[in-house]
Length: 406
Image 1 (cartoon, rainbow, N blue to C red):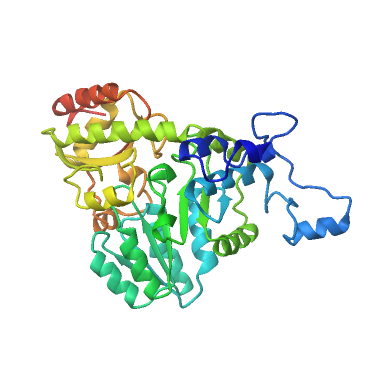
Image 2 (image 1 turned 90 degrees about the horizontal axis):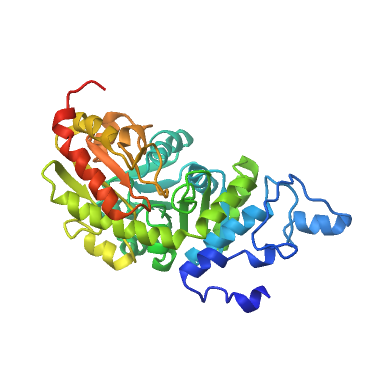
């Protein structure tokens, strides 16, 4: 029945968001994938048990290694990214750290950019050097400089596009060409773009990483991470995860699966709203700068237009008046959670100093090109006009609130 109803990979991404990976795991006529909470899976036949344990037959042995609900979630993302294989993790940072530590050894070299998510930056700044892994952190928009560092030799080129929180865009085809000349693997964090807007594997990337907590789940109620790529690479990372222990909980996998059924609808609305709001803010006298790859003023707009189908639901903007203006502005918003998250059905707004780059010092944020007066604005699925009205009233009240007691 599943084969007749679902032609693997032939449907649109929206249809795959709903159906991919599910039918063979439906039980007794159920229309939804069950949550399998069992920690272990039993076998009467010892030889069959052994074959499953060795990976020679399909099946599950122990929840830290694999789980049916988690497997469906990974398969859905694999289908959307067009990958050979996928593996799920307890969080997005677990996916990033497992991928790096599973494939790097002492004496290896990583080339990356300064604009990665704060948690990833800490791995590059503090943790990999402790294991004698050399890290070159490049200016994100200096493609010549990145290529020069790649030419010095590296095992992994780690990128994020669009970046968090300054929304810079990397020319993936160009970076992949440079990495191939040195035999390096290319990792890309695709969280901001989502597989609806961008598929890095189609541009030659080896491994795609998502914080599933964000747009994939979309409801701010489940932590998770996922990697997609070539089967051999994913297997190596997944074997490391089995020992390291960063398993995705089956209930979280179920919530992420439920959220993904509306991924294409949410992203469509968020794409449209974010671009409309960014255009409006760009003209506002109290706004210093707007960072959105869909704006013609964005330095990498042409690259984004080439490699993305949509520009995403997150952008950032800086207010005139710096951090004092941010303190006065954010509490005035009616339709935005002030929280350290993004990609939810509700709009979320936050300064990097309390969200994406909390782990970094002010000096480190400054070196990454993140002004203290920056606000990251993740658009929800509310009506665009309501969000515009909300931003307008908050900006109109800004002069009276600056300097007022909290």
